Image 1: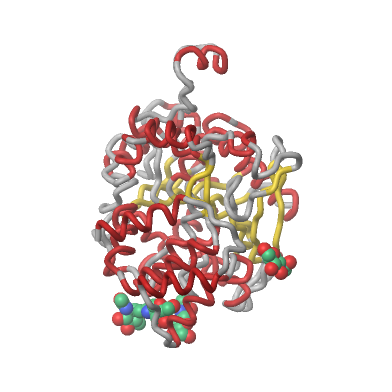
Image 2 (image 1 turned 120 degrees about the vertical axis):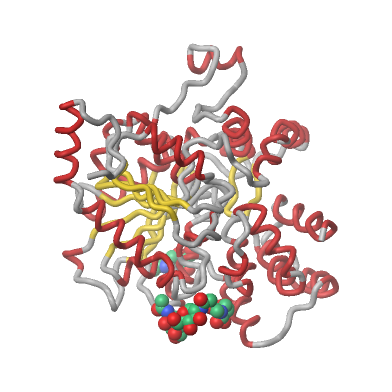
Amino acid sequence: MMRSIVLLFPALCCTCRADLASSFEDILLDAINPVEDDEVSREIAKELKMGAPEMIAHYGYKVENHTAKTEDGFLLGLQRIPESTKGAKASEKYPVLLQHGVLCCSGNFIDNGNDSLGFFLADKGYDVWLGNLRANRYSKKHMTLKEEDDAFWDFSIDEHVTYDLPAMIDYIRSTTKKDKILLVAHSMGTTISFSMLASQPEMNKKIKGFLALAPVGSVKYITSSAIYAAKYSAVIKSAAEFANVKQFATHSPFVENFLRHFCPGSPGVCTGFVNLYSGYDSHLINQTRYPIYLSDCTGGTSVKVMNHLGQLITNGGLNKFDYGLTKNKEVYGQDFPPEYDVGKVTAPVILVHAANDALSDPLDVAILNAKLKTVIEKYLFPDYTGTHSAFFWLTNATERFFNKLLELLKKIEKNEIKKIIYILIKFLGKCNNYNGYI
Ligand SMILES: *[C@@H]1O[C@H](CO)[C@@H](O)[C@H](O)[C@H]1NC(C)=O
Ligand SMILES: *[C@@H]1O[C@H](CO)[C@@H](O)[C@H](O)[C@H]1NC(C)=O
Ligand SMILES: *[C@@H]1O[C@H](CO)[C@@H](O)[C@H](O)[C@H]1NC(C)=O
Ligand SMILES: *[C@@H]1O[C@H](CO)[C@@H](O)[C@H](O)[C@H]1NC(C)=O
């Protein structure tokens, strides 16, 4: 087990050339772990080669590719599922943006076969948009910079907050000509969303509401292996600087191939990885699909983002990137990086979390809930074993979970009247926290 993990790490952390002779790879990987030649294995191999647009088409949905330009020149790739044959008429459609977390990509929402959240929402009549943060496999273009340039990789979570998410939301609003959209985010995607809503008041008016899945507002009580990543983030940073590496865990055909060979032969290793990342719930997840799930979480990001994440875990707050005393003064005009104050969020929020989630710990969610002033509901995933990835990688997901999510989305859509009551109650000073009691 240990040896296999040691082998898997370099595969995830290095970028290999796309044109690496695949026959050589196959021979090498076959020697380590031969792949069965049955129908399911062939299907997995086929799906692994597909990007998000191909996957969407493969499952019989219409797909559009879109590009949102950020103010600082990144070109972010979005996929849209504009309609489903089972869906409502176009005029009734509400745009919903599904936003992935750090290291992952839009594939998260469409990689669970026909039981994927993206397809489910399209079937229920939503205009589904899948976002991608800068520098992941779908957002590797920039107006002037190239991937080889150091400046391309010089971004932390703050750039996702300041530029990426607002650019995607504005793009969707202008393309669909809808005033407000629904925002659904997962994990660090929620951190980015809360930070954006806290620091850019006008963005609150552009969303109808925010459904936060496995919300991460602070990571004080985090129990996942991410802690170790944080502990070693300074080491990772120095090593990366020494080797002049700026990118982390980038998707490549080699990674796809590696996972395809590895997971079926050593299911324990891939289970181990999913578990380490998210908590223990392997009996709820279809292990045959692990190569695809894991491949979608090698979306790629910068070393600076990983470093920022490490700072958040170490400090337990939700602060901007910490450059150290001297440079902080220069960049922020103060010794310490400013904090994103989630108390300033004014859009309606629903928090959905799981008891056994290693990254979105119930204690952290409780802290977040206490700080937020516009929470309509805090919903705990009913199955105790639900974990961080239960929000998309789950067998029978529709039955177990998506129907409930739909109910919660509808609640957000109908929230206008409640908001007025809330303002009244606040005004009368009878209640300083909304928390869904009305
Ligand atoms: C979307 O982009 C993919 C490549 O990323 C391409 O294969 C596909 O044909 C495009 N689809 C449409 C509808 O343009
Ligand atoms: C997915 O497809 C299978 C096989 O066609 C079917 O039994 C199942 O009901 C489908 N699930 C959903 C959520 O559509
Ligand atoms: C697990 O995934 C494989 C590959 O997609 C599929 O053939 C199989 O039906 C799935 N099993 C369940 C229980 O969903
Ligand atoms: C999934 O749902 C089907 C049909 O409702 C059921 O037969 C099956 O046992 C369920 N699988 C799991 C793993 O719960």
